[in-house]
Image (cartoon, rainbow, N blue to C red; front, side, top):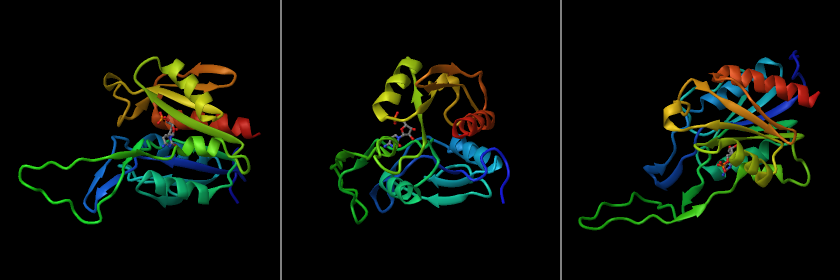
Length: 219
Ligand code: C5P
C-alpha cells in the first residue's frame, strides 16, 4: 500500500495540449509540452496519491506508476475526466483548445487550384468550469491554471471566480519569460484567501510545492 501524505487520495490531473481535427490528416494544436502537468502527476504519485493522468498528445512521457488515459481532442478529454471521477482533488494543467473545427471532414480536404478552404469554428467545452460547477460529485479541491501575458494576477483572480474552481495557479507565458515549453515556471497561487507568489523555480519544484499544498488542504 502507498505511503506518504497523499496516501489513500485519488487525484485527477489533466495535461498536455489537445489536438482538434480538421480532417483525417490535419489538426489544430498549441505549444503546450505537457511538462508542468507531468511533473504534477509525478509529485502527487511520489507522495502516495492514486493518480489518474488524462493527457493530450504531449512531448514528454507520462510518469511511471500513474493510470494514464491518452486523449486527442477537448471533447475526448472531457469524457475521460467525467469517467475518472470521483476524485479527492482535480488539477487541470492541460492547455485545452478553446475552439474546434465545426465540421470535421471525414476525408482529406483536397487542394484545389485557386481555391482556399474556410474553417468554421465552434467552442469547446470548458472542462475545468464543468467540473468546478458539478452539483454532485465535485472533487473537494479543484485547481485550474491561468497562462496569461499581462495583468496576470487580476486576470487569474477573475478567472478563479468565473470558472468556480478553488485555486488558480497563474503564470506569465509572455515569450520573453521562456516558460511555455521551458523547464522553469514562476507562478502565483490564487485562492479565496488571496495570492501568494512563488520564486521562479523548476517545473518539478513547482509541482512538488503544489503537491504539498494539496496534501495540507486535503488533511
Ligand atoms: O480559460 P483558460 O483557457 O485560460 O483557462 C485555463 C484553465 O482552464 C486551465 O486550468 C485549463 O486546463 C482549463 N480549461 C479546461 N477546458 C477548456 C479550457 C481551459 O479545462 N476548454
